[in-house]
Image 1 (cartoon, rainbow, N blue to C red):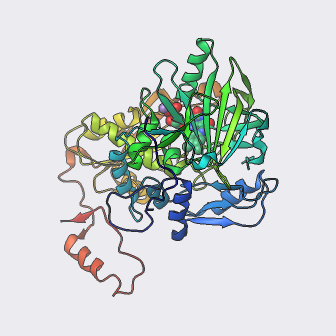
Image 2 (image 1 turned 180 degrees about the horizontal axis):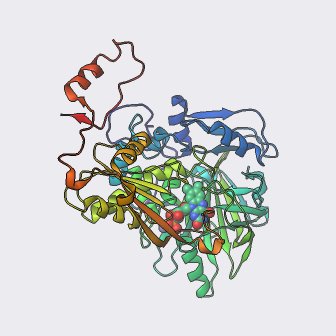
Length: 512
Ligand SMILES: Cc1cc2nc3c(=O)[nH]c(=O)nc-3n(C[C@H](O)[C@H](O)[C@H](O)COP(=O)(O)O)c2cc1C
Ligand SMILES: [Mn+2]
């Protein structure tokens, strides 16, 4: 077991600049130091209420794309210094980039391309004894445990209770193979030492709990309630079911995750987290939980049974920061751009693995139910049937099958992340009577309100829309108006001299 050094400051990636091997922030505080000078973090110094008010402020402030993350510094009923950070990533490409150690100023498609490579690297974590770990500054063990000191909140008026875990990471162990899963799952406060843990069918932590129970054993669990952004991003993604997300987080960070041994349970926890809980789910322990205002912009399932966790110990830093993720319609939804980037990278990886040639980009639009409902694939058509094949695959690869309803193929002169370009292609290259196919009985969830009665919802459907130029007539298809590259470059070079604001736009379609 390797001993780690804690407390040594690491250089922080904080400036706009050239691509390179940048260092991802070591913890949430370094991330705050990196984003605040860019105007990407707003401190709210006025005292606020936990229930509804922090959610309302976030929803209202985040109606604007690129709005800063909100750090609430004074929360009624919490000890002084206890803070709460909402929508870390929000709708900001730069905040995502900083979280994974990439430079600011990238286009979303450039960042997706980099994440494609990043998400397939693995570096295992290191475990220390935790003596100098910042998270071990304060403890509540056994009878001392009282989670009501932290600013858990009712996000929406109809929520079933205050939520302490939303932007979080839950660590469980596979009881057979021993590897550690990290997943982001919501947790509702029941009382001073119990939380409800909601897990959809098939989620890894649920499989671990069910397997422990089938062996007549309780299931141990760690929950990180104040989480660093790279761990949050990795915890929200479906990685392969037989390997630990901790390795992938190391790969994203470019260095091992720093862990310390649990004090009560046989699981490690992150040394530099803000707030960590050690808990146990006893045999058959379930309790009513929810509802919760969800990523669809609707309350999900009504109150129902969820796993009941007994909190055995809590560890936290000086002036701990509880992280929250608001679920709502875009752009105030913490699930949206996060999934636009991470999910697009994963679908693109899946298409590469299948040997699908000519893919220029994949983009899951954030406004479509948290990045889940609409996928655009841009491709260079190379053979008859190429676009329909790419559509069918993008609709059903593991990274893209869940929930998605609209899958659209566009030619390579269309930037898939530019919704104006996509609508233009649908308007001018798609012939609905010929170019739309429907897939039926596909993988969905009963959080989708469009089907009733709710029991029907896990079985969805998908429309495949071919908005590419007709392959048969590619050569004679009406010629698109484009700028000649030489003219574009000339104009771009004298942009400021012309008195035009900002930087010249990047154009996907130029005449060579
Ligand atoms: C902010 C946020 C909240 C989430 N809440 C839940 C939840 O309460 N229950 C759930 O099953 N999945 C939830 N998810 C989705 C899971 O994090 C995601 O499916 C992830 O892949 C789970 O990890 P796993 O694949 O290791 O099971 C949430 C995702 C985000 C980004
Ligand atoms: Mn997993």
